[in-house]
Length: 453
Ligand SMILES: *Cc1c(COP(=O)(O)O)cnc(C)c1O
Image 1 (cartoon, helix red, strand yellow):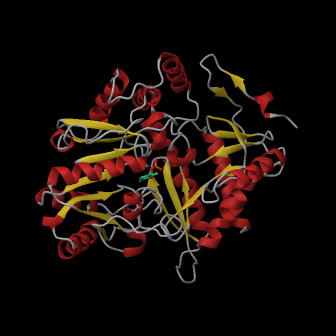
Image 2: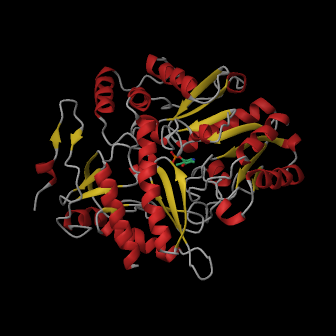
């Protein structure tokens, strides 16, 4: 049995160079992984779950290596975070340089260049050529909280509309915005007030065109909330946790238009869809919309914790000085990582790579769908593609099948994630640094798991 130490070699820049292969030398979990899982059970709060029972010791390209020497194909990117690959050499170099320089001054105490440079980059690369400003935070949920704060301050109104199947985080306000009770909300109330929910466009289930679905949502918003009370509408352009739901053409533009006409701030939550994931820098571009505010996190900094709100300068400037911020927000190490990651997104062919991955994923999954009626729908953009599983006899969601396929795939060395309000969606979020060979092998394993389930 080879140990992890044998197979991790350091590049001059410090990023792990790992053989790009699926390699199982023990069953999953192996003994060392099992040891960690046992310690976790004793030491870590039970509410913090895990998808794959592995003890990760290295990751890069398209693989995660565990303490037993197994090398697993990574089709999840740590939930769309390691989009440019784990420990990307440019990120490693930027982090190493910054950590030796200074680790923290607090941007609100003594500001520094990298925070301002990240803001400038975000203002430049987000959709729309209007004047923009940004503010940086630590997590996606914190960015969403701040986007809502800013929209309320700007409009002088309080209500916020979120959508069916929406996911916006785990803090109190963002739990209220999130649709799904289990596991995100159950038992954790009471939730923040003045949050309302509108219907999404979900073509596979509602059969509506985009304009029809938008008309329905807008009618509900007008009747049940009223534009005069509404500060903001917040929506993921393609829903993440909710099931990679791609709204029908025309739905998002109609919502944006209605918001513009009614002094309502349109917030695109691009925390999962942002940074080349969909084959565009941001998913808003897939639908031709320009949001007023955008929240970003996950893929922004090559794995370091960073989040942002970016948007129209007049909206972003609505808050009084001192009203926005946080001790760690825009930490210099995370900002250095983000500048390196944004360089990779812009200059190393990442949009093109995401589109190539879409072709492979959709091609393979559509083949599966043609051969197996339990694959009800295949959808998504770029390296954000999902398969929804149903009972062919009734069309009902099949969460048990979905869980079985994911479990067997992981046991065979392929990390896949599930999602969806009904738990019946497998989502594919490979790092853009994965090879085509590994991607195909990962899909072979998922296909075999489906055939066996
Ligand atoms: C993950 C996610 C969040 C929450 O981000 P955290 O960093 O986990 O707080 C919010 N919105 C969307 C769309 C997400 O995918």
